[in-house]
Amino acid sequence: MDRRLGRGNSSRTKERWTAMTVMVELTEVRKLYNGGSPQAALDGVSLTIQQGEFTAVMGPSGSGKSTLLNLIAGLDRPSQGRVLVEGVDVGRLSETELARFRRARIGFIFQFFNLLNNLTVLDNILIPAQLAAVNSGVALDRATALMNELGLAEKQKLFPGRLSGGERQRVAIARALINRPLLLLADEPIGALDSRAGDQVMERLTELNLRGQTILLVTHDAKLAAAYASRVITLSDGRVADDSRLKASPEVAPSDILQLRPGETAP
Ligand code: ADP
Image 1 (tube, helix red, strand yellow):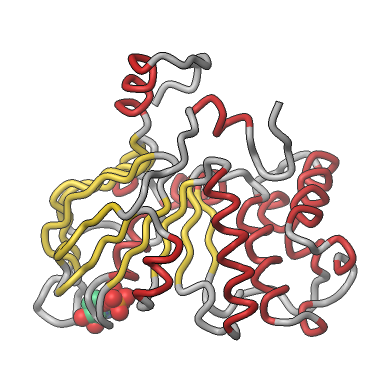
Image 2 (cartoon, rainbow, N blue to C red):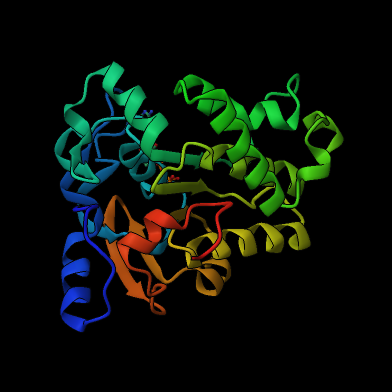
């Protein structure tokens, strides 16, 4: 991916963008677990995800969704095949490099939020920036912008125990975005929320996607996938059983994506 590309409107330029904005590329990926079932958790998966896509990964329990997410996040390595994220071969990184890769490039949100209950909202959001040694003033500015955007400004001094589920997940989204990852991974992000809070969280994710954030959502909920994702990949027994584009991804050029980070407004 060439981040130096300027802005432009010609269709030729757009074609060049399209060709140069592959975010994730899996080639013939297999994953076998030692001591697990003899069947591969992923069994020859090849797919690409473009920058700006909002992709849902669906499939029954045990079909390989979490394994796929973990491989893309650099939490695990493929047994065979190759996983490239922004051109980086994740399977070839050392443990230290993997940790750095995750901090800088991947944002994660989970079903049960995984917030630290003894830290305030603000301090939870700041953790990844501190781990990545981001300047504390810069980190505070980013956290403030994210809290404003996600409707959390009034809650910043509270502890997670005082928040609703929807608010906790919005804190988790802010935490996931503080290091400005180009890829946001969401594993059943509204599975623990009531439908209203769930809708609000999905609306927030949609807004982020419309501003260029690439999102990979794991869900077992077909309605959710159809309502929000631009593409649905269905796994079955570790293979891609279906891969459908539902609607166009937002027309955002890479230069816009890189400029329009959370908390910033369009020029
Ligand atoms: P899903 O997220 O779709 O429920 P998973 O990716 O968790 O599916 O699991 C796919 C397959 O891999 C399942 O058969 C599961 O039992 C197996 N599996 C997943 N993780 C492990 C592990 N750490 N050790 C052994 N087997 C595993």
